[in-house]
Image (tube, rainbow, N blue to C red):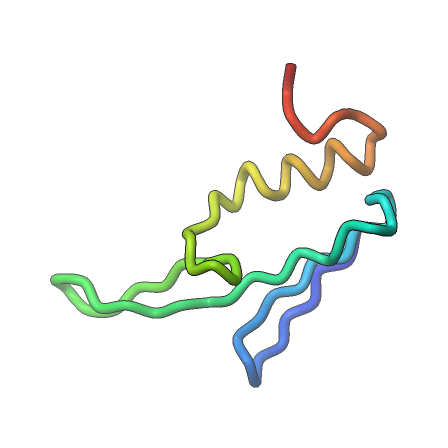
Length: 72
């Protein structure tokens, strides 16, 4: 599994060699927003939905280990 950060575009690309070839790489975008005390940031998919980073990494590690992406 390779994680690449593109600082110019603010993208994080996760390449997982254990994934089937028909599945694309995971591309996340860093989005900043203001909150009451300043600014914060979170990761979003291309559809602008927030990403739970812990579950995303766990899913990739399960694929690398040869397990199902979802816990049973």
